[in-house]
Structures are given as structure tokens and as C-alpha cells.
Image (cartoon, rainbow, N blue to C red; front, side, top):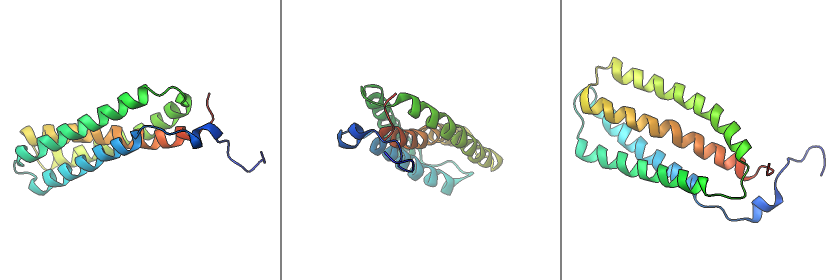
Length: 141
């Protein structure tokens, strides 16, 4: 191994992994669709009959992603945790700023609850995707 080459686990390249990143990205897509829908109605009440199922499916995808992640045996958990905590910090700050914008626009009631829950999924799904992708190719600890 040369000095310039990254430390990559040779087994991780060949080993198939469950679709953790795909599921968390799917959750992110559903949340973005719901967020755009909610933002288009702000500050009026958005149609809950459309946004609530989007939130439910996004939560289910994210939960499946976390379960698959927890069941992995050969996986660099230390790398995952290190990347996840910093990405989570960045996305919690971003989510807080988006939440502030909705509160400032006088969004209330069920619309605000849906926005808040969607922002929680947003703040978790992106760090999971980033951390999984990095840890997948890291040297096992």
C-alpha cells in the first residue's frame, strides 16, 4: 500500500450490503415532496390527507434503514459513529433554521407538527446516508 492510497477494507468492496443508503434516501425524497407541498400552502393549512401518508412512508423507510444498519455484522461502526455525529450536527442546525422559517411565517397547528416531524426525518436520513457510505468502505475496527 502506498502512502497516497486510502485505507479501504478489501472485503467491503466485494461484500454486498443491504440497501441502507437507498432506503434513507427514499425517506429523504418523500420528506422533500411533503415539505414542498407544505411550503406551498404556508401559512394556510396544508392538505393532511396527502402529507401524512408521505410522512408515514418516510418514517417506515427510515426505520427499515436503521434496522438493517443495526443488523450488519462486518461494519466499521466507529467510522459510522464519527461521521454520523458531525453530519447530524450540521443537519440539526439546518433543520432548526428551516423550522424557524415556518414558525416565522406563522405556520400553526397540524401543518407545523407535520413540518417538524418531516424535519426530524430529514435531519436523520441524510447523516445516515453519508455515514453509511463512508463506513462501508472503511477499514473494519
